[in-house]
Image 1 (cartoon, rainbow, N blue to C red):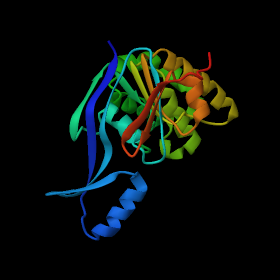
Image 2 (image 1 turned 90 degrees about the vertical axis):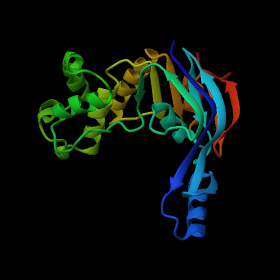
Image 3 (image 1 turned 135 degrees about the horizontal axis):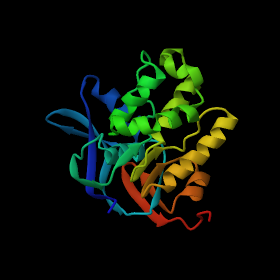
Amino acid sequence: MTSIKTENLTIFYPIFDSSSRSLKKAVVRAATGGKIANDAHGISVCAIDNISFSIGEGERVGLVGHNGAGKSTLLRAIAGVYAPTKGSMEVNGSIVSLLDLSLGMDNEFTGYENIFMRCVLMGIGKDEVKKHVDDIIEFSELGEYIRMPMRTYSTGMSLRLAFSICTTFPFDIVLMDEWLSVGDADFSKKAENRLLEFINKSSILVLASHKPEQIEKICTRVIKMDHGHIIEDKKNDNLEK
């Protein structure tokens, strides 16, 4: 069964350059909201502080809290980017991270080549990509530009291609840092419909957002974070039906 479970999860970031420690401490504290620790290896900041929770199939979980509360760090820990310093993180199921849509894409390669490069990082085989490549190209609306290097693309064109790739293949767990909005008004509307359909096919959604209206519209459960702690974990009673 698809699931996410943490027990006493703690994550510290090392601060490798320890010169000007007092200034560095102040900057890091202001930027992250985390607490500072000193050990034999220098200075580190605690981004996630001893949290435990579990998420099961069918749940759509919204992460809320101020900047530096630990939301993005938690998403990256679920994605496997950050390893626990203490405690444990157990994830069962395939994961797609929509935290950085263009991860692994190279501006010197064509859009067509980048479809395959991005899919490799997503763990999708070449034969499976070939079955869906026409759909990706059609949805992105790139036309003949698909055979041109991505350095010739506008920012919007690059985002359309990356979004089209990432929302083509089904995954058990979807991770998002803010709700995605891609392209102009016309493309944005069809992109939102595609994203909702994509999420509905997944077993678990974890969405970090600063927009309460988005959480209320999408999520079945809300976890509020503050300085690396979970201070509230509740059912979303305002979920739109």
